[in-house]
Image (cartoon, rainbow, N blue to C red; front, side):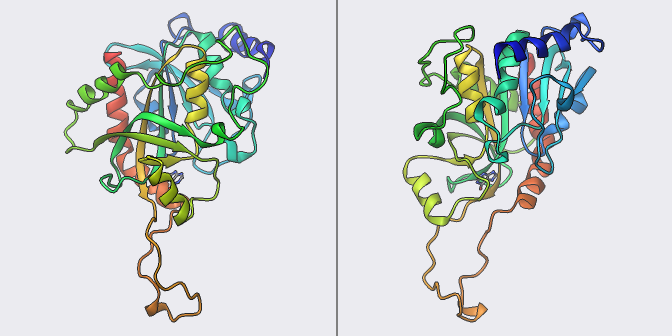
Length: 300
Ligand code: HPA
């Protein structure tokens, strides 16, 4: 993905045959909708949609439950011009991280100042219940620490510095605003703050890996978000991240591990993560999260 690709995507959106109207062409806020959370666009007004397949430089998402389109519109009571990614690109789909984060750079060229990233994540912290939301306080970029960071390669100095800090990645003011926005909801306490560990997937974590992630201080684990955050911070976009806890990961060790033992002698009711389970849980809480984000954009 070169600057030229990005510039042709920008002119496709702003000067093409189906160009955006003036009021939508300079979105202040960008939103990435995670698994099952695309319903947010239902409350946007004056929408203009672009399927990813139409936008120069975009790759095509391959995951069930992740339809791909870029939606521009007005959000919140104060009509905040917003651009929303419905469906994101994941590393496990086989894309390079520069491809999965291409839309973030496009958002930067469009003038986006604040990015709200959402995702479905597995809960490692035992206090987190299914359906709770974890405000991301910090991350552990496992692939990034071991050779796969989206900024590897020649630095695009038009966007930011060679060595951007990540110590201030998640804006404290925006995190406080999430609590403020949540006060307007009528649901019981469901907010936490915590550390998001990024893993490549697509296989879910083994039990030993889950114990490892807990030991290094992660509260939630997922297969997205961090590359987008790294690229957003590189180009100076403020970030707030919200993880919807869709499953609790299995961390306990089995005492009896004989696979030939009769079923009644094997450990009962192991919670095994599945994509269906993740989508189901996201569905149940999606509306609350959407309302939360809708209030949040008014406060930014
Ligand atoms: N692990 C990794 N990614 C996930 C999970 C999980 O348990 N749940 C939702 N996304």
